[in-house]
Length: 169
Image (tube, rainbow, N blue to C red; front, side):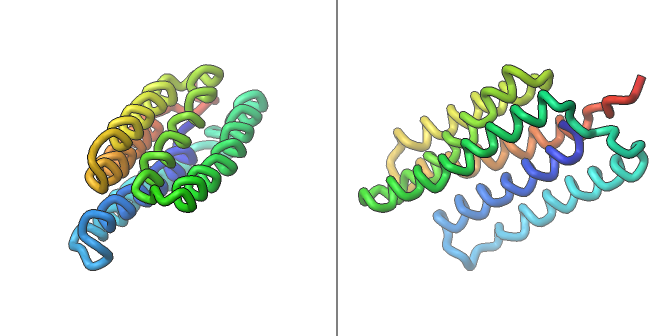
């Protein structure tokens, strides 16, 4: 996992946060800089780790690459499908919880097949956020799902940044 995964999860945590706060307060809200600061901290830490690591130290093995690639492809298909279905059926408030569910589902195979336990934990946290967000009154549910997803991804980024490189003894 390491710094590369932290960057990806940190970025998308920011996307969830922006979506949730914009649903809550619109585009003119004082919370929009928060994900920039969080991502900057993640990026700076990742850059420091990568700068001091040997080349390829954080590269996943071939098996992990396949699992990550396939899970990400399924996620890349699932997000537009969920967004489109909820949008065209007149349920746009369920788009954010739906996306959180797709992201959570994409972490399940990675958590099962890659030896990085936080993948399984983040998968279940995202699925819980999605389910809770779907059953609450809208738009409160969407806001909760988005904020919970952002927090889960940011915490997982922090765990990823503590992972030792593969070639460290």
